[in-house]
Amino acid sequence: MNLVTLIDLAGTRHLPLLLSLSRRLATPVYRAAFLAAASRSGVLRRLAVRPCDLDTLASAIGVTEDRRLLRAWLDVGVRLGDLGFGDGCYRLRSRTARALADPANDAVAAALEEVARFHLPVLLNAPSMLRGGRRLTLGDQDGAVIARSTRVVQPFVQEAIRDVLDRRAPLRLLEVGCGSGIHVRYAAGLNPRLTALAIDLQEDVAAEAEANLAAWGLAGRVRVRRADLRDLDTEPQFDLVTMHNNIYYFPTGERTKVLEHARSLLAPGGRILLTTPCPGGSAGMQVLDLWFRYADFGGPLPRPEELADQLRCAGFTGIRARRLIPGEQFRAFVGVNRTPAPVPNAEERNS
Ligand SMILES: C[S@@+](CC[C@H](N)C(=O)[O-])C[C@H]1O[C@@H](n2cnc3c(N)ncnc32)[C@H](O)[C@@H]1O
Image 1: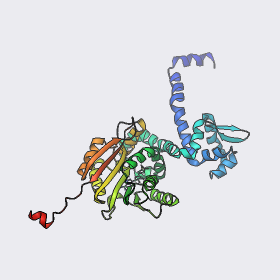
Image 2: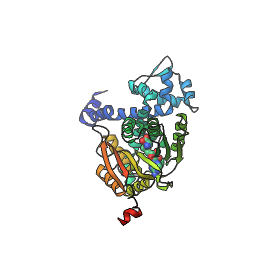
Image 3: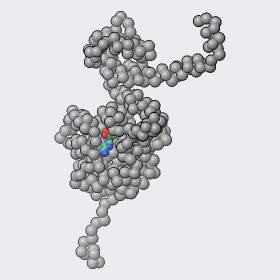
Image 4: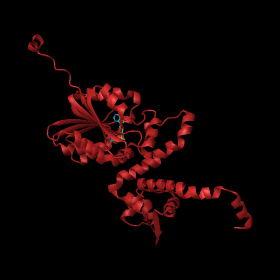
């Protein structure tokens, strides 16, 4: 660098800012995107088995195109410190890459993918979407990824299920928006006499849930259907309706009607269990709220008192709400289908 360049640099303020942004902001975003794609493509799982050369890795993940382009992408991973390269082979290097490759952390890997593929775009595009009058649709999401990522709150949802579920009596469960089917599996494990109808709006999600529940040996006890709760027309036969992480898939103004419909499918005295993030939680939850505000089908995360009111207006009584995650706005709501007043018999009428 010559003296003139040095003097030029000293006169500008942007270089220190650029260096600081690059380290503190740009590099973490690049890593998030790279790791999300490496997880999604199967690169992390493959490298967790053993280090691979380019050709082996390309075949393992189904890349038949110009492999030099795959190399360029992998080399970014090396530059970011998540992959290593030596003796002609790529390997996992960072602790985060190794953790994300572990199938036990699949929900976290899916959550990272959700951040990279859905949260970043809504943050990036919100003002231009507003100017262009564009809204997000269900097709802007990937139901299969969301079904996996919501499992990050699985232990807390399970606590809410343990709280309401009768363990002995025969119990008919309707699970709305069943995702992977994991919560139905848990409920069926707690009560061996439970039978269930699990529905999901999205065809691929319902198909995956059906395959999962069959693999878990529950095909005889759980029926799975692709269905929209709003159109579901069955006898009022269920003892419990569960809605986990999906009330914000309905616009705020429609929620009372939706809950009323859920109640109409319950037997007298049946209950609803609804779990959901509410506003005021982590930044991730706030971006989730933003995503559904920008969706043409959903609405904001529900405020607890508003949701309790909607349950009441939908005809539920004995409404209980509680926080499931300390320090986070993830809550469970339980309500009872008010039992119709018993019809008095002739003797009672005349007394
Ligand atoms: C965030 S995912 C949650 C999945 C699962 N309940 C869980 O907690 O892991 C929400 C699911 O609700 C489903 N869903 C949304 N609206 C629905 C509707 N009207 N009827 C049935 N399912 C619906 C979506 O298709 C999606 O799979």
